[in-house]
Every structure is written in C-alpha cells, then in structure tokens.
Image (cartoon, rainbow, N blue to C red):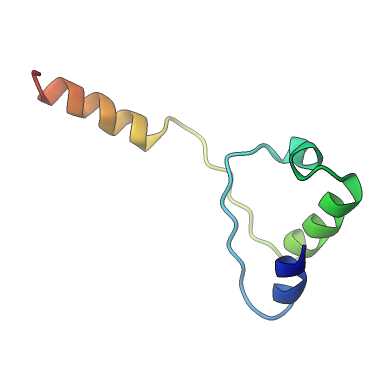
Amino acid sequence: MEVIEYRHGRGSTLIASQLPTEHRQDYIGSATLADAILDRLLHGAHRLNLKGESLRKAKAQNAESVDPS
C-alpha cells in the first residue's frame, strides 16, 4: 500500500499479473486494503486483458519438436 500511495498521481505505474481480479481480496488478505489499493490503481488506468495460449508454452512445444533428444 505504501508504494501505491507514494506513486499515486506522481507517475505511471505498471502492474502485470496472472491473478484474476475477482479474487484480489483473497490474495491481498484484507478487503479494505484491496479496495484502497485498487481505487488508486484503477482511477485513470488503461487495462489490458490478454487471452490465448502462453507463448512460453508454445515455444517449449516447438523446442521439443526440433530437438530429437
């Protein structure tokens, strides 16, 4: 919370996560703290939800098909 509070309104903050937002309170551990953090983060935010297979998974499959060992 201290980091988010310090950054709020001062500059850009990039957050990348694989955690679904609907479970944010469970991960943070406090509904009040989760709401306070997200209020600051989501105000004026640009949110990108990516879909599809993992590129890491695709690269691993390609490596297996190229390497016969």
